[in-house]
Figure 1 (cartoon, helix red, strand yellow):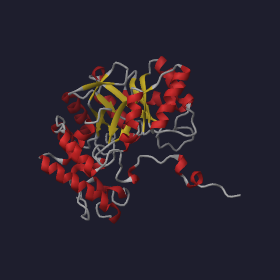
Figure 2: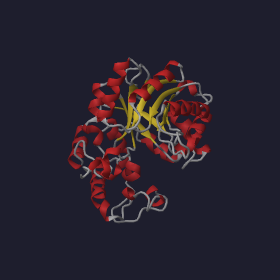
Figure 3: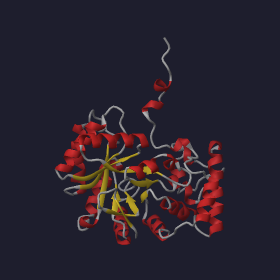
Length: 343
């Protein structure tokens, strides 16, 4: 396992990280703990979760699994995307951040969180409010470092400037989607990361399972697949929809390239994310132990220049094949914000 620095913190994290989005939701407690043990045995030392995953169950399961191994783990969690029904029980206000971190610490059964991340940007909360609150939590020892998720490059630059102005803790990482068919990160965010010494943790390297090679354009998804389970809810995964024909044509070209190279498409997809110098860790989000073993079996693969050039010819650098796959929609994309008010 290769280990890389978390920004300029001096902390080293594994090139692959275990994501806990399935724990307590699509994976049972027993299966989740088994995967955690297997990942740690493989050499992974970074585990990422959120207070949103499984409505807190993911954190609880991870806390239970790490009781005898906590000292060897860099534990990351997120706040701000809670599906709360009560007013002021979500988001990024000073009041809620302090409440959220205490709840996460209890579920994780730990005295500190190594990396505490803002799950989404918030238009109506000033970065000063968020950063000053997080800075206090670092001083109190409840968290060690702070990061973001799903942010744009200009937002990261804005936050860095505010930290410099107040001489307070700065975000040291950003978590963002990145795959063979979603290369938007390369257009701007990767360069921001280089300029500001930010670590990039990339998630969804298989684009929700589309890059496993088990889907064919115009053909129904297998009954046990994620696309079948989410049919009617996640149209971007449906191979039967005519609107997805172009995307699946691109995936078929990538499949042909993988066949010519003598490797699995899923392994090529994972290795592709590791080929970018700005990427610190690629997040794996397995649902079963078998899926984790598949990730591990291809972890040593590295792509040569010829394969990377061929990928560039199929999906140009910086391009996202399907814009509907964006992880969040900014407030300024609403009709009210895009249309000038008529007198």
